[in-house]
Image 1 (cartoon, rainbow, N blue to C red):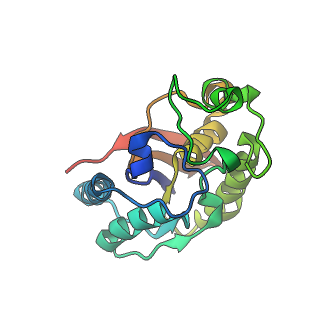
Image 2 (cartoon, rainbow, N blue to C red):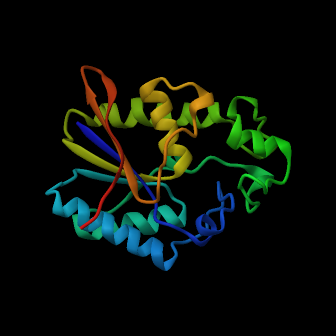
Length: 204
């Protein structure tokens, strides 16, 4: 079985480089809608079909899933394990090399092994635990009757998948580009998940 983990389309907060995390209401920008349409058309151009479509419940992911699902003839199955990492009080604040609100959130993006999740936020390991549950309890059990599934999620979720599947050190969490609407493809084979393709950008 193949699993395509696809990041949602661009939002205005993505463009402004503001931390979204568990902010549920941020929606796709016009460019983000275009991202999702291009991903949909690119998947169809490859002749790909899917047995199941999962989505995070957050608006930016669900909007992306509905655009893509319309082309695939699938309704999204909402799963809260695909929610973005919560950054608690840091949500809405800037993230860029010269514009973090304090040293702790700077460490989150520059030296994640030193980040301490504040009250109301999640640690990297907490996100890994729920994603491991999604992989093991949801996807592995679907392998017997699904050839290919699609999961629409978020940047940290996709990076967590790489961390789990590749055994990445937390210090390498932010390694590699991961643009909006790119996808990592993993396969479940021989009782384990393996990475097949990384950060595919679909175009048509």
